[in-house]
Length: 502
Image (cartoon, rainbow, N blue to C red):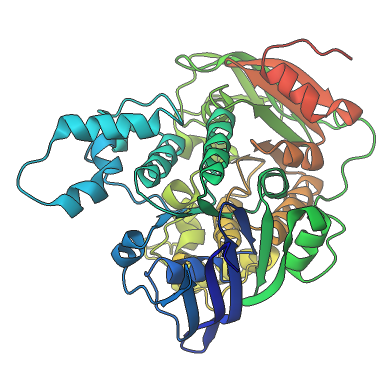
């Protein structure tokens, strides 16, 4: 028992009639990386908030280093040696990277004067382990991935013995992810215990020592990673045998169908450099490549979110040149942002209003008044089509799981009756069951004749879902793969600018 640093026993937490945790057990040992897995709504975040003092349990016991504890605030937990990197970015965008990283130190030390030279030195030492980011930069000027790096660097400045990382790689580049795992293993070697929350089986099985699975607020699995398989963990997550994570692909040549979308020599103001592509009826086309290769910029250029400076785009044989996104929507092109919470949905608005937001004209009377009944009917129709799970369409989107929030974002696109849907990281931050549902929905749309383009950084998703993949490097298409050629090795070779070996 001497190696147990944290033990939670019979933890229960309810919110009214909702039982978030139903007698959960969790044991963390010194110097281990312990994966905590579960679908959205399984209770992972509630359990971690109890450890961090954000939420108080209704019953149960927390034992830290042999002593029974109850943390009444995150500051108490932090003083006890617990650091928490939340999935939701909680930074001050108006101040510098250095000030954000050292915010806790500044608040704790108090006083009227702040030694900003020391603040910059501490911040620089923490962040340079992860990425090359100027600590004088305003956080609001950083990309989502770099803001996540700042969150992680902030935790590294704390003198903690337990580090909780909630989906830390969801918005990181491959290089940043590798750097994070190197740091995690170095901290583990120094005796730190790490709770690693992730939906990605590859990360769990490559980097973690132990895995605990929660389902519907209950503890269902706790085992060394070496003693289980990804299939066992997935089945424990969803409570049933998951035999099809991806729907069946097209049979035969994916380019045999009519061309829905054609782009020739498309360029923007610097990131996209003369791209050609075709999208065929019935296929799901993947765009792969390293972060910064121009994938998102390409689809944003095609649908009017970025200015096209050169090239030609045809939709069903007719040339189009969207001046802005509203123009693209009218043409039949819609886009799903990778930043779901920032750009995909309005978290503090009801589900029905979110669904109608893209095409208000469809739920407006001839006199310019909003027709609430039509709005509810539209949301109900698309919600049923997407198998949306919600208490009421009047509930705010923030009340939904990540997977159901994403379904609301997709439902909003459907109100435009799109000819082509371009989806940027469509399953980022959603659990394995919701991923499988979204993949099946995208295949259904493709079979109904909608053109589907998927941008994804998850190579298993690209390979499992897409019929054909275009790989980008430095703003250009570096290669096309289909069938047996679609392997991680081939995609990475093309993404890195290398020639295929066979």
